[in-house]
Structures are given as C-alpha cells and as structure tokens.
Amino acid sequence: MSHASNPAARCAASSRIAALVFLVVSLLAAPGPAAANEAQAAIPAAVDSLVGTIAYHTAREEDTFVDLARAHGLGFVELVAANRDVDVWLPEPGTRIVLPKANLLPDAPRRGIVINLPELRLYHFPGEGQPVESYPLGVGRDGWLTPTGSTEIVRKVVGPTWFPTERTRADRPDLPKSVPPGPDNPLGTHALYLGWPAYLIHGTNRPYGVGRRVSRGCIRMYPEDVVKLYAKVPIGTPVTVVDQPVKIGWHQNELYLEVHPTLAQVDQLEFDHRFEPEPIDDLWRRLREVAGEAADRIEWSAALSAARERSGVPIRVTR
Image (cartoon, rainbow, N blue to C red):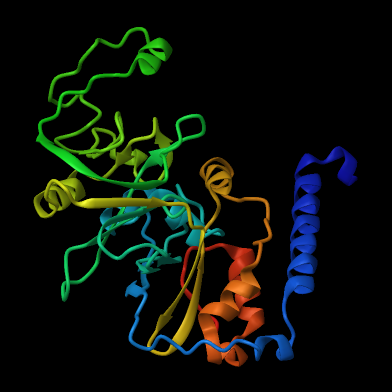
C-alpha cells in the first residue's frame, strides 16, 4: 500500500520530515567551539537549581498513567512526556516507567509561590533553609488561559462557594448562580483567592484533571495537595506565574537543561500522546550565558537531544 492511501504512513512520514527539519535548523543555530569559549561570566557555584530526584516504577497489570500520576505526586501530561513510548492506559506489565520527580526551578524570584504553566507545576518556597515544595497542577485551556505575571494571595477559604462567571453560565445555562460547599463543588474543599479577580488556586472534585489543561483559567490541585499548601501560605504570599517551557540551571557544578512541551504541544500530548517538533529560539545563546566560563564544557549533542525530545526531565549538558 502506498503512503498516499495509508493515513498512518503519511503521519509517520510527516513526523520524520518535521524531526529532520528541527535537527537541521537547530544544528545551523548551534555554536562552534570558538563561539562557546567567548562567554565570560563565572559559574554561580552557590546557586543550586535542581530539586527532587528521578524515580522509576515497574508497571503492573492494573496500572494506568492517571492512577500512577496521582500516587506519585505527578501530573498526567508530564508522565506522558517522560514516557512517550508507553501505553498510558495499558502499560505492558514489567515496563520501566520514568517518574519525572526532579525539576529545575523556574527563572523567577524564589519566594512565595511560583507557577510554571508549560510544566503544569507549582513551586512553594517556605522560607530560608526550608526545602522547596512542588505540586502538579491543572491550568487553563485554550480560550481560558491562566494569566502570567505577579499577584498575591488575598483571601483563604475552607469550604468555598463557587460563583460561576457570566461567561461560564452562558456556556452552561443549566448552572445555578452559586454552588455551595460539597461534593458537587468544582473548587474542592480549600481555595486560595488571588489578586486577579476570578482567578484562584483551589482543590477539585475531579482530580483526573490535574496535570492537564482543562480548567477555565483557575489553578487546580489534587485534594490532598491543596490541604497541605493551604496550611503553609498566609494571606499576602506573593504568587508569580510564568510560561517557561525551557529551564537551565546548575546542580553540583554541572549544567542541566530541562525542556517541556509548549502549551500547544501539551494539548497534542493530551489527545495524541505525541507532538510536532518545534525548534527553540536562542537556546544556544541562553546556554552559553548560564554556563559562563564553563561554556566549553557544554555537550551540544546532549542539549540538542533534550530540546528535540522535550521530555520534561532535567538532562546534564556539561562534560
């Protein structure tokens, strides 16, 4: 059968062509050894950007990625991104599944709460000397994007009442003007209201939506996670929301690169468990700037592989 009459073959061929284009564009943009040696900045040895550790799980017959994600404090899409070749609903028993529980911190002030939309993850900085905490999230889908920028927690409520917006009720005329606390309330049991009107961090009565882009802009957490966070963050806690699919940072004098799918690619992973390759603008300059005097140690092939795969796993890119 020819490619012209076989949709699956056409799709596979298109993916191979896109991957080849990505490789060529990235290689043309990559610096040679001389350019790599031009960087002058010193290594920030006192700054460690890596939190957590990668773990592994051996699949059992009853496993699904939805169950594994919640059991291990992960989101559905980040588990899919790290295990692109594994069936998310029926993983073969005995399959080794990567649990991406290590992350580089986003490029943002290390205080209060930092949310990185592409990785669908929240970072909480409790204070000096205390370990960083990290939680998976559900965020806004297309047409209902979670905003980026800086705000703060302005109100905390146990047992929140949900007041659907006019736009939500226009889409769903069956909704009442308010939903009281209880099992039918989509805000779950705890809510942290932000300085942005109509946006909040909250629990959920639909935990399968955590780690996905399914909300109307609000930030969902697993029911057990929002209880923990609620107890630790006072009113006035700063909240920074960023859109950073690419993160670069140091750990034990080694440079790491962590690349996540873009928000558009997150949607592709959600529905197709794959995505179209997408080159990363200015990656090589950014790597050189962070590497500083260690730029000649960068293993550019490792960086290219991380950029192409977008697994969300921190990859060491220094020799």
